[in-house]
Length: 341
Image 1 (cartoon, rainbow, N blue to C red):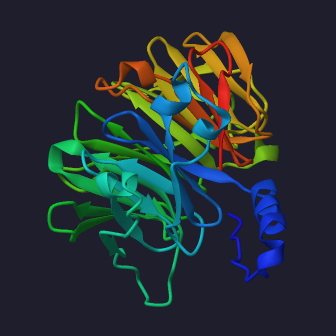
Image 2 (cartoon, rainbow, N blue to C red):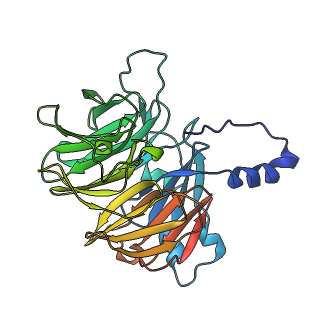
């Protein structure tokens, strides 16, 4: 992924520099606050912006309501992934994860609470952390990325408790099977690996690109996105976006879209996906394309569904990627407006 280099700019050129920054901005990650009324977005410059969804969705909203409440420098390099606990925002960049208190950020007190670095093989190794995953039942956090391993951190003690090894190249994405203590990981090696957290062992491997109906050699073998729902998994990237039955390791639906997909999620009886191109795609489980809803960015990297029960008035889908804007969909049929760095 591209790294942005901070520059020292004369005061007279600040506005021009900020305009250029926005022009070349990529938003890699999003996370909704525990109260459901705020959205954090992390970009390629290491900045995190906090937006007020409640203010932007208000009937009295102005253009200023769509700007960040606060923006701060969180990492030296890109903010690749973020998740929220009941009190904290956790953000990941190159080689480390940091914690921020939501309550303090909303008061514009943006001091990191702590930072942790997984036990890498050498002190010179600073791999990017592409994915964070919360495991609520064991109060832990799983990190994965450029060192091809999954690291589990105990959120109470801040210690790393286990390492899961099996991937032979970068890990791009993680997903949790909530009914069983199992985690799925997808990576550059073209494999989706299923891990049993009780035994810390790999229990299933699906090499998607080896299945003829999914393979697209011209796009590569990498797995860029995955999601699970009970015994089902959907994944995509280089290979076609495909719905799998996990128990039988069988591809059941290949979705007819050529562009590589970067984010996918189950939502009610639909699958939502996004990637190269402006559209959020809505799929029936049968493979029928229900709708393609255009956004403002030329490519999308992350989708976020705000389903916090504490703020039903802020129930929205947000989409972000290769621009300084976060598109807000108040229903799945159209883009209502965009938030902007």
